[in-house]
Amino acid sequence: MQLLIITLTLVASFCSSWALPPLNAPATAAVGPPPPATLTQDLEELFLLIPSRPLNKLVIRYLLNDEQFQAVVRIINSHDAYMVRMRLKAQPELIQFHAWVRSQLILSGGGSLEFEESEEILRLFNPTPYWSVYGWQGFFSEFLAYFPYEMLRAHIDAKVMQGGSMAQLWTKVKALLPVYERFLAFPETKRIIAQLEQHGVVFSQLDEFIRSLFDWYNLNPVGTQAIGLVPKDNGTGVISLSVGGQDPSVGGRNNAVVVVPVDNQVVV
Image (cartoon, rainbow, N blue to C red; front, side, top):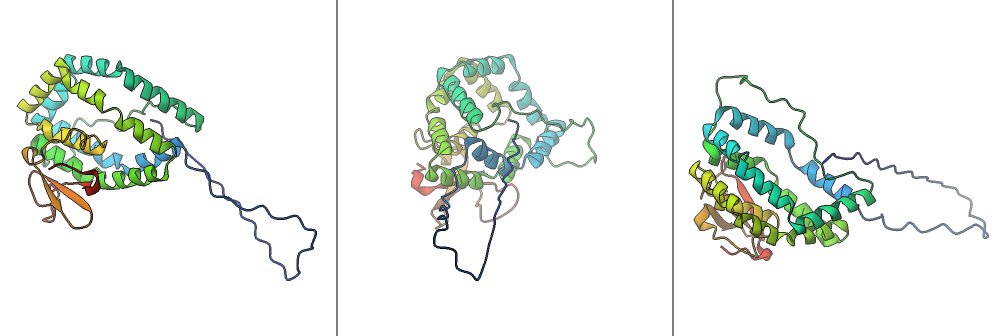
């Protein structure tokens, strides 16, 4: 989606005088609270939290150098994958959701839901002969290290608590769970998942990440021990899920951590 440039102009005028104002001076209007943020502003704030440049470079590095990741890319661009995307776009709930978001963006001065294509050109040659790639699991771990999961969820939760357009949007996003379940039940999707798992993708791990990101995990929980996400209560009101069964307190780039609020009742 093309990010919009929102210019906030604040004009303040301060007047001071030792003389008392005349008794018949008009009363100064009280300054009310600022208007609630529009959906365009809320979505812009979310997009600005995502480090798109490092993520883009991560994809390019694995696409050029990792055979397992290259196989995954070929699978998600197969004929089955194309048919799944077409069936998914035709789901009535998704069509209604798309229409609602589009209308809200137009009302708030935004554009459409279309995303701009990356302007970064895919390089055909590595700048150096030394690259560290570790298959799909290595890519997923690095992705989680870059992806600001905790920051995004905290920002979304705060916006939802405030109400407004973002709260409405998130309610509609959570209501799309049946579409996701239907998507997983497509025969083409099952074939794609089987092919991905043959090339090292632990789909149950990816499924858990998707459900936790969109508040779908607590409605149809998946056992985290079976997918390599080990829960650890750090005493701060959240549960840290470390990828690959490693303790998130150890450190290191591959010890990516997904943080899920405890009060969302994650079943582990």
